[in-house]
Length: 218
Image 1 (tube, rainbow, N blue to C red):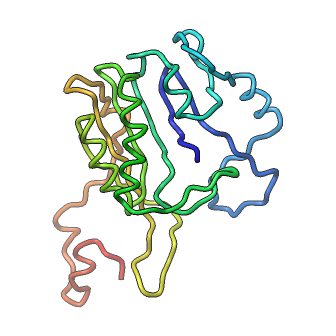
Image 2: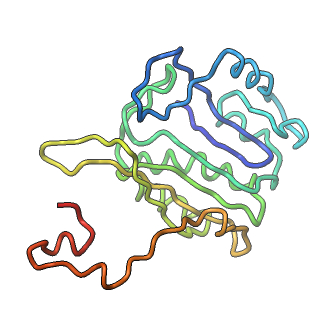
């Protein structure tokens, strides 16, 4: 199984997958790498087999088993950690299969790597952890053991899996945590400008019903 951890700005650790010139749907935002892209990214790859200094992994992509690499990384050098772990689903990741298990067992697995990454973080560091709705509660419980959980970001995917006997699943969660009360957050860099709707424009006829009044599409 592979655990994708992105450590910013000092370490980038991610796995690059390429589909060779596959024709994609118009709304498919999957990135496709050209041979030149791959050559450029491969030049950044390094492998770690022993204790490492920050200078050795600065602006590099660490290639290897996360659980083996973590023990070699220096302490207290990460400002921002973004983690995209395997969800609690049976799925193949580039040849390795992650099998769905009980939430209790999944929580134990989450704890195996969350406990190890703590020493890498600066006191002012922030942490973002991606998950689906089924594993969201487990991620929250384990993250709360080690960090201050600040918020849960729920984002909507453009595409989702429909069902005839259930609600459409088209959202995922990202848990936002910090090591301490002293952390960096730039609200101006992330806020979106929205159009204000006056109270007069909200007035509708009774025929339109409650659904439209609440912003629902009929």
